[in-house]
Image (cartoon, rainbow, N blue to C red; front, side, top):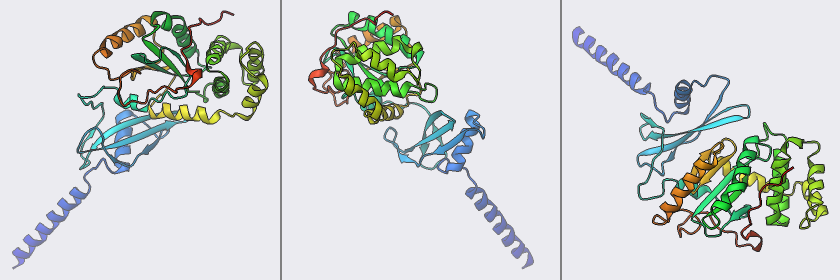
Length: 323
């Protein structure tokens, strides 16, 4: 009798221990568990704030959830995207491609060129979308390269769209520059490119304090610009919401710095030299002859759409003005 009771108690203790071990099993769907794991994985100490999103059924891989871990330290931030198995036992980090679709379709679906300043040929097989900051020195280099080379090399095959992405934490007048650019664009789309060239050319001379005076001085020489209207637009920050919109688009695309260029959806972070960019464009021109799954003439369900406004006519290439 006593032996039977001891065996029963031992079995109960073992069962309880097994249940406790089972309940303590780590699960990546638990936010605290995933945070601790990611901190260790990427050496993110207590100075880095972590936010873990709610899991959502993955749109790219059946049987998994999409989970985003947002890490931030002051103005710097980075998103880590994971695929978590339904039982929470496995996490994957990487790209999942559908072989039947353009590998850059997720980016193409988020690139909205409507009402963005543009130059180049309507219906071009290759579309470039540039996220840029008027105060960024690397953006200045890339802008000069694009203006000097792009349309002279590809008068009919390429269209370039410009998207404002001011990095205010390190560039104090960058948002003002973006707002002014949108103010100019509202008045005359072609004149935007004159402003674009002027702002980059005079980047070193502009400060937050003298920005408006500099812009108004430039505007005096522009016949297509109503100076009073421009001044009011700058004072009221009338185009601020438009800048916020392009910033949100960039964040959705995980743009982390400027310049960031997309060539038919292909991401090119940081500056790119002309020979490298030209090789990518040449390849894409040939590829799109048969693929027809990107560019403005692809006939596909992408958001690279033309605004359909008279002001959005092809802009002739004008090299940046020399100081």
